[in-house]
Image 1 (spheres, helix red, strand yellow):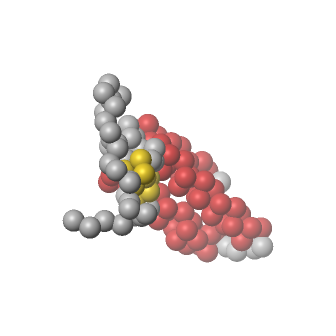
Image 2 (cartoon, rainbow, N blue to C red):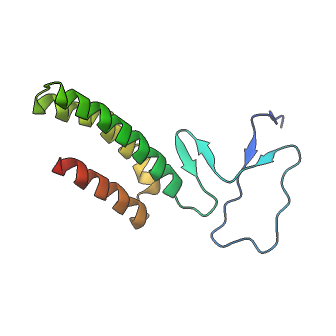
Length: 117
């Protein structure tokens, strides 16, 4: 099967650290994280990096929403902006990383902080 070696990457996923190092595929780069369809995969089957990237994007969106609030937008418009800008960032691929309680706790804490404000 022909492949494009310049665009191909290899990610070794293992639950436990691999005792015997597996040789990488010839001419294909091995990476530590892999971003595929907007979801960041890590070799230890965790999604902490994905969650931290998404929370950074959500905080950037909240900065825009705070600016709109300071400019005089009413609460209904702020809620629409939050539902449009922030929630899709967090809910995309939630079914994939949702099994991890530590990742869900960080998302839940972020949402709790947002609703307080």
